[in-house]
Length: 281
Image (cartoon, rainbow, N blue to C red):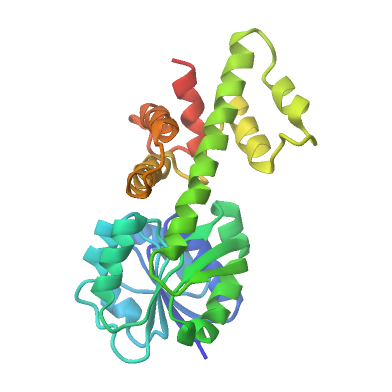
């Protein structure tokens, strides 16, 4: 049974996941390239490691929640993941990146497990885990996934299947957020209070909690990161790569990528809701 988890990467998502693991009573070691982001987790009961090697020593599960495939490979390469350890890879790194990391894992059991959710669900342990990996390790990972999420969807055993579903979901998330930004900007440009748009769809078949939350952030100009706009640009790139590999039409995603890119220029610390800026230019 899993008792100890090493969390490598304590940004918006990793920090929340680490806190959820601590609440579940697991022994948690954390490491982050910027040590100041990991320090508060020490006050919550985590062991703050100075190096990735120190964090993973003795861990039953190594959980990576880093920005992209390159940074993940750089951190994991050279670590001792032998013995009975399982590597759970939850950063959104794309299909090629997942394949590369699975190869890097070698004989270590590798579970492709991106998550659905933003800062608040991560902090509350209410993420949805989209997992793909060996059936033999699933019971061992149950305490981890139950701590960080309200639901686990096992997509398959093939590394990358978790990401295939995650990229499809994120294509919808990017689309609905940008569509909300377009409507907010249009109502404002036409001289109508943008709150009227959100009120008009509220409770109807076209409504969504995401549109309401992001729409109100856009109207207020409050862009504290929950899902960073730099991550939205990165994810749009990964979705475009997947669409080309799948042979599906990518024109809409190319347009969305451009809107997020324009909004992210010099503002990469903001939430993805800041995409509304691209519709105001």
